[in-house]
View 1 (cartoon, rainbow, N blue to C red):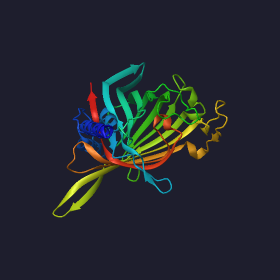
View 2: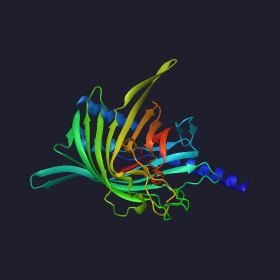
View 3: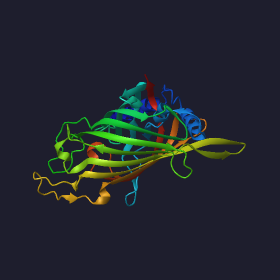
Length: 346
């Protein structure tokens, strides 16, 4: 009974902490709250001059917190045995409004350092958080020409990111299965991206095309032939779309945004289960072209009376993005809340 009581206590403490983080006030010229983002984008699409830096900062990845692990849509469907999943994205902006000139080549930009952490809390006894994903990254955003734009904009970024699970155990269990409890997972990658914003009537206002390259330094040897080396990503974000919610006597002005991503692994994932001479009894399984596709779509719904957070719905189809679980296929929908945390500029 004591261990169960402690497990519930951990759950309450963790949930209270994450809820406090989600509601923490933040500071940013571009994103004081979600209403400011909506006003900023509406001004941009109306044709008013808006700072490029504010546009780039307004499109940073939010933090989300799910209730439970979501509903798996595989076969009969069942809820994942998790209490929560959290993707924490604290953003720190540095070197803002810097202008660089190399010969006649001029560009502006700023640096964003993000201490990204993704974690899952299991519903097992004591509610353990097993092998969180640690993804600290530094991204330099830059653009050419005017620092203020209207209705159409292009900018770019160069990112260096780490991805590991903080473990140093063997990758495989003695029976040849992946050691998801304490097995070591580590990789590093560089991403080059182009962003485009425009006032299209039937097309998302914000698009991003990017290329991830894992050069191989500080990369776990056991990822060979079964984890991405080169991946192409296409992302979309809609502008805030009004979502009137009729209530007797008054109308609440809600809005919704959709974030969608389609990714394709160009190289590195030749096998779902790679051959391993140490485990001759494990049958290798080649990856089909469809195994290299990952689809994700999110809906962020903001009630009119909410200031900093949104209702959150997320659907994923492909292989798991949670570090060493990358060989596990997912077809899942999740529900929770999302928002921005610690958006600090300097």
